[in-house]
Amino acid sequence: MQIGELLTTERILSGADIHSKKRALEALSELLAQGGQVSSHEVFDTLLARERLGSTGLGHGVAIPHGRMTGLKETQAAFIKLSGGIDFDAPDQQPVDLLFALLVPEDSASEHLETLSRLAQLFSDPVAVQQLRTADGSEATLGLLSDWEARHAA
Image (cartoon, rainbow, N blue to C red; front, side):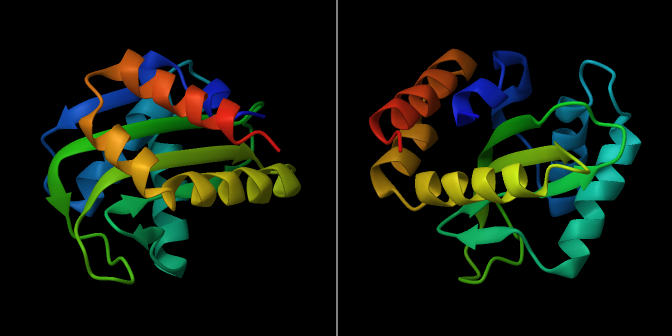
Protein backbone atom coordinates (compact mmCIF):
# COMPACT_ATOMS: atom_id res chain seq x y z
CA MET A 1 0.00 0.00 0.00
CA GLN A 2 1.21 3.49 -0.86
CA ILE A 3 2.11 5.89 1.95
CA GLY A 4 -0.21 8.58 0.59
CA GLU A 5 -3.09 6.09 0.50
CA LEU A 6 -2.76 5.43 4.23
CA LEU A 7 -3.51 9.04 5.12
CA THR A 8 -6.44 11.39 4.75
CA THR A 9 -6.30 15.15 5.17
CA GLU A 10 -8.28 14.65 8.41
CA ARG A 11 -5.39 12.63 9.84
CA ILE A 12 -2.77 15.29 9.09
CA LEU A 13 -2.11 18.06 11.59
CA SER A 14 0.20 20.95 10.67
CA GLY A 15 1.73 23.47 13.02
CA ALA A 16 0.63 21.63 16.15
CA ASP A 17 1.59 23.36 19.39
CA ILE A 18 2.69 20.25 21.30
CA HIS A 19 5.52 20.29 23.82
CA SER A 20 6.02 16.69 24.98
CA LYS A 21 6.40 13.19 23.64
CA LYS A 22 3.40 12.02 25.67
CA ARG A 23 1.14 14.74 24.28
CA ALA A 24 2.37 14.02 20.74
CA LEU A 25 1.47 10.33 21.16
CA GLU A 26 -1.94 11.34 22.55
CA ALA A 27 -2.60 13.61 19.54
CA LEU A 28 -1.53 10.89 17.11
CA SER A 29 -3.79 8.43 18.95
CA GLU A 30 -6.76 10.76 18.58
CA LEU A 31 -6.10 11.11 14.85
CA LEU A 32 -5.69 7.35 14.38
CA ALA A 33 -8.88 6.58 16.31
CA GLN A 34 -11.01 8.60 13.87
CA GLY A 35 -13.43 6.25 12.18
CA GLY A 36 -14.12 4.28 15.33
CA GLN A 37 -12.32 0.98 14.64
CA VAL A 38 -10.37 1.40 17.87
CA SER A 39 -10.37 3.87 20.76
CA SER A 40 -7.78 6.56 21.22
CA HIS A 41 -6.90 4.98 24.60
CA GLU A 42 -6.15 1.63 22.95
CA VAL A 43 -4.06 3.34 20.29
CA PHE A 44 -2.15 5.37 22.88
CA ASP A 45 -1.41 2.24 24.91
CA THR A 46 -0.13 0.48 21.78
CA LEU A 47 2.12 3.36 20.75
CA LEU A 48 3.39 3.86 24.29
CA ALA A 49 4.16 0.13 24.68
CA ARG A 50 6.24 0.28 21.50
CA GLU A 51 8.08 3.40 22.70
CA ARG A 52 9.00 1.58 25.92
CA LEU A 53 10.86 -0.97 23.80
CA GLY A 54 12.97 1.83 22.34
CA SER A 55 12.39 5.22 20.84
CA THR A 56 10.86 5.38 17.37
CA GLY A 57 12.77 8.61 16.78
CA LEU A 58 14.86 8.17 13.63
CA GLY A 59 16.99 11.28 13.90
CA HIS A 60 17.04 14.49 11.86
CA GLY A 61 13.80 15.63 13.56
CA VAL A 62 11.69 12.63 12.52
CA ALA A 63 9.86 9.92 14.49
CA ILE A 64 7.69 7.03 13.32
CA PRO A 65 5.61 5.80 16.27
CA HIS A 66 4.01 2.52 15.24
CA GLY A 67 2.36 -0.65 16.43
CA ARG A 68 0.20 -3.63 15.62
CA MET A 69 -3.32 -3.81 17.06
CA THR A 70 -5.85 -6.53 17.59
CA GLY A 71 -9.28 -5.53 16.28
CA LEU A 72 -7.94 -3.19 13.62
CA LYS A 73 -9.27 -4.09 10.18
CA GLU A 74 -6.96 -2.01 7.97
CA THR A 75 -3.68 -0.14 8.23
CA GLN A 76 -4.03 3.46 9.32
CA ALA A 77 -1.63 6.38 9.51
CA ALA A 78 -1.48 9.90 10.88
CA PHE A 79 1.02 12.71 10.41
CA ILE A 80 1.79 15.67 12.63
CA LYS A 81 4.10 18.57 11.86
CA LEU A 82 4.88 20.37 15.09
CA SER A 83 5.36 24.11 15.42
CA GLY A 84 8.59 23.38 17.33
CA GLY A 85 10.70 20.36 18.16
CA ILE A 86 10.23 18.07 21.16
CA ASP A 87 12.52 15.60 22.92
CA PHE A 88 11.74 12.15 21.53
CA ASP A 89 14.83 10.26 22.68
CA ALA A 90 16.07 10.15 19.09
CA PRO A 91 19.49 8.57 18.51
CA ASP A 92 20.99 11.90 17.41
CA GLN A 93 19.40 13.69 20.42
CA GLN A 94 17.84 16.25 18.03
CA PRO A 95 14.30 17.49 18.72
CA VAL A 96 11.55 15.89 16.64
CA ASP A 97 9.09 18.02 14.67
CA LEU A 98 7.77 15.49 12.13
CA LEU A 99 5.83 12.47 13.38
CA PHE A 100 4.32 9.81 11.15
CA ALA A 101 2.31 7.24 13.13
CA LEU A 102 1.42 3.85 11.72
CA LEU A 103 -1.02 1.23 13.00
CA VAL A 104 -1.46 -2.13 11.35
CA PRO A 105 -3.72 -5.10 12.11
CA GLU A 106 -2.15 -7.66 14.45
CA ASP A 107 -1.74 -10.26 11.70
CA SER A 108 -0.08 -7.89 9.19
CA ALA A 109 3.56 -8.28 10.20
CA SER A 110 5.01 -8.25 6.67
CA GLU A 111 2.94 -5.21 5.60
CA HIS A 112 4.04 -3.47 8.79
CA LEU A 113 7.72 -4.03 8.03
CA GLU A 114 7.36 -3.07 4.36
CA THR A 115 5.59 0.17 5.23
CA LEU A 116 8.14 1.05 7.92
CA SER A 117 10.92 0.44 5.40
CA ARG A 118 9.22 2.73 2.88
CA LEU A 119 8.77 5.42 5.54
CA ALA A 120 12.45 5.14 6.49
CA GLN A 121 13.32 5.72 2.81
CA LEU A 122 11.03 8.74 2.65
CA PHE A 123 12.41 10.30 5.81
CA SER A 124 16.02 9.70 4.79
CA ASP A 125 15.41 11.91 1.73
CA PRO A 126 16.51 15.39 2.91
CA VAL A 127 14.63 17.16 0.11
CA ALA A 128 11.35 15.39 0.98
CA VAL A 129 11.81 16.13 4.68
CA GLN A 130 12.43 19.81 4.00
CA GLN A 131 9.38 19.97 1.72
CA LEU A 132 7.24 18.40 4.45
CA ARG A 133 8.52 20.94 6.95
CA THR A 134 7.52 23.83 4.70
CA ALA A 135 4.26 22.36 3.37
CA ASP A 136 1.30 24.64 3.95
CA GLY A 137 -1.56 22.55 5.33
CA SER A 138 -2.95 19.04 5.13
CA GLU A 139 -3.68 18.93 1.41
CA ALA A 140 -0.18 20.12 0.49
CA THR A 141 1.36 17.57 2.87
CA LEU A 142 -0.70 14.72 1.45
CA GLY A 143 0.20 15.83 -2.08
CA LEU A 144 3.92 15.84 -1.25
CA LEU A 145 3.72 12.34 0.21
CA SER A 146 1.81 11.02 -2.80
CA ASP A 147 4.21 12.72 -5.24
CA TRP A 148 7.25 11.31 -3.44
CA GLU A 149 5.74 7.84 -3.57
CA ALA A 150 4.98 8.15 -7.29
CA ARG A 151 8.57 9.22 -8.02
CA HIS A 152 10.04 6.40 -5.95
CA ALA A 153 7.72 3.53 -6.90
CA ALA A 154 9.45 0.21 -6.70
